[in-house]
Image (cartoon, rainbow, N blue to C red; front, side, top):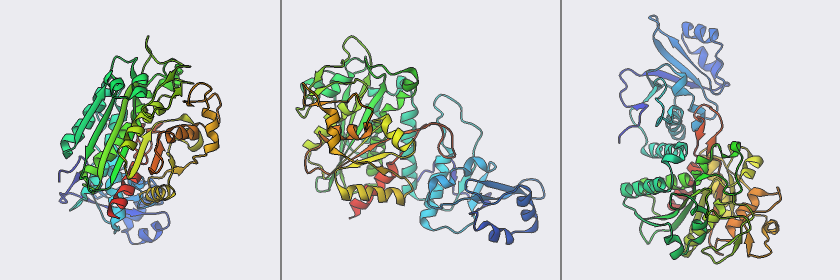
Length: 458
């Protein structure tokens, strides 16, 4: 196993790294040498979560350190360590159970992450030393980094072509197959909504379909919203709302990363990944408010707002997924600002048409400290999507229940009997926090993997 940057199995120069909570710190402190006690007292270290303190030897070199960690099983509780500790190799000196050790290893990598494609990395961070590391933890880290890198990359270098390239790279690495329908072929092969949203861009819209696994295994379909940039279309966004719209392919980034995890860990599942990749641009042939567009499902949709485009492309992708009769259908999308108003930036909104699926996903999120919050598929709100001239409107003029109505729109394209879960995800950190640098973020990804892993085992 090749170790990522920030990890080493060479223990020869590793310094001891202790971990305490605020409750256990006084007892731990009593067992330390008097100079260490005096040093920590002078630094006013008290074991508070997110704190760190190192102490010197007689020559002034780092001799050891202690971390304040509250929830040992939360990777982000450890994520401050790599940049709070002096540069060097550090070996854990405290006893941890397996789950806490894996959280430390994952949190260490998340804490070291910086997007460096266009800017040099900051000063080197500390390395974690151990005589062995868990391969699954590093696969999880790679998946989280994949989401962050894809979302952080500007649209200039992350359009529909590049999303297709990312899918092909995954397929080549894991022996999967990829089929792509692009440009006007979307009309010929009946993906009219994807074509309508993406037709004004100089970069062709497309549906990317990756397949992997044995036919005898349970079939999981994963869909991702890949709007590589969202101007809002003719219902143009204001500058503030458009500033970070390179991240509007965050759902596709999550779907790609989850598919990569399933394949890397060789879960006994049959996988179909569907990414609707478009740019919602402005041009002479941009779709317009008031138009009625066709969909793969045969549902006619009146365009109330061209800025409600993600649900349009996902509708065609979900329809395609249901044609394959999956045992489970999941989708990820940076779908609504309303979800952020309701739940803030850190909690993805989970919708599901199956009670057991919802509860299992929420429980998985709690177990791996990757939480989601369930929101209701309150079907009376379908009245907000009523159209006088089509089967459905893509939006409404009310500010009520925006995330709910978006989920209800998607549900219209899910066949009866297909168990479906939808995550309305922010995929972004607005500011820097330990382990969560400003920019792209994986949210609900580890929970989804834990859900699929448990179901595959069962």
